[in-house]
Length: 83
Image 1 (cartoon, rainbow, N blue to C red):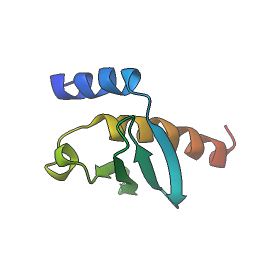
Image 2: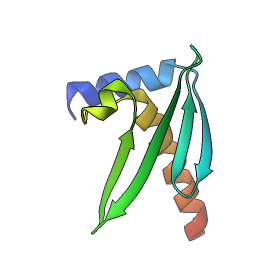
Image 3: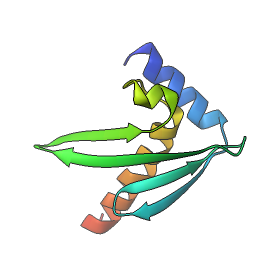
């Protein structure tokens, strides 16, 4: 795991973000500072893609918004599959 991903995980654990599902697998993340970001999850040919419109996400870097959404999206997908 890269250091950037580890940093994003650590920040996601510390930050108290509110994640809200908008439609399908698109989510809105509200940060403690009141900033709103949109995170999209998708799968293509067995690979999972998560994209955030924050400054880091726009450059393809991992961000804590993506980590928070990925946890929720994974849990919801498991519910849909009946796990």
